Amino acid sequence: MLRGPQGTLVGSNSTGGAIFVNFKGPDLDGGIGGYGEVGYGNYNAVTAEGALNLPISATLGVRAAGFYRRHDSYYRDIGPFANDAGRLNEKGGRITVLWQPGSFSATAKISLNDRNTGGYPYRPIPGTRFAAYRVGDIRTLSFDTPTGNRDLGFQAGLELRQELANGITLRSLTGYQNKRIKNLFDVDGSQAPAAVGGEISQDYFAGEKQYSQEINIISPTDGPLDWILGGYFQRNDIRVRILQSEGGSPTDITPVSQRTTTGLFAQGNYQLTDAFEVQVGGRYSTCKATDRGFVTIGRGIPGFPADGLPVADLSGEHDDARFTGKVALNWKVDADNLLYALVVRGYKPGGFNSTPRRSISKR
Image 1 (tube, rainbow, N blue to C red):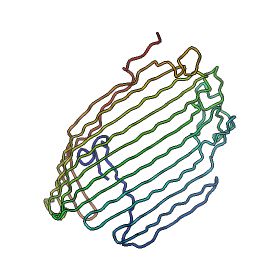
Image 2: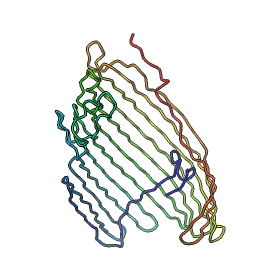
Image 3: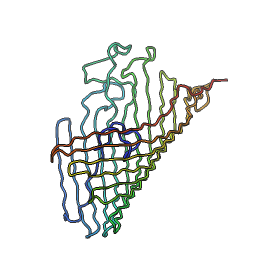
Image 4: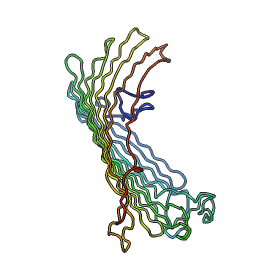
């Protein structure tokens, strides 16, 4: 975990700190082993997880891990679709392969997660025009449209490390993520008729692909001075589709976005004494955001184009760049206590929203 705003090792959007999560990899010296756990509870709750470590040779090993969780919904939908909002059906797995023939090592990881909850359970808010259509107790739902919620995530990563004769390490980190979210909402949460603004449904989809590459040159850490140099590239391709129908009148919002982030950074740590360490670093980051898409109305309604009439253009772009840095003094009081003082500048790129974007009027 890195405390406070980050301006060197970690770049944009880490203004509150950063947490690094490392999964356990293959153990080449540990032999074949693993663990397994299962559980059962009320609402037909079932849990299971396990892992297997498999050293194939002195230089090659595989570790596989997975889990499964499910339970019935805590709610009951009395609407015409008998939705199962609030249930859980989730499963995931990860495979890690390590090849370490001497001073070179390669670690590849692939993971997949699939989470299905049947939709979000909610009831009309008291004081709104839909409050009169609340029925039953807090666990009674009354939707008049289908509901659903499913999250899918795929991750792949490859780390290559080469330690040179002088102790310097060259490292490459390559990453890919593909995430999908699919939701069906009964927006008003009730069986209110169209006459009072009910019968509002929304079909929401969001997908994001992320590609990243980082290169590091890392010094040995056995002397008073250690340092790291690096470069970073990341691209995010984002697609959103919001199809909303209110009383049979559809409104579609379909933005497509691309975000490209780069960074060059360096940081050095110098041990003044056994108790005091100075850290100095800097980073130059760039960010480019590009959007396109439209807001359209009337899809499928006679008198409108087949795909709807565009009423707003969501296109736009934004470029941003910033130099950030860090100066810190760490005092290791004893084995259990650390005091520090730092001056650091974080960075969060700017952007744009749809408010000033041009509207398209019907001619």
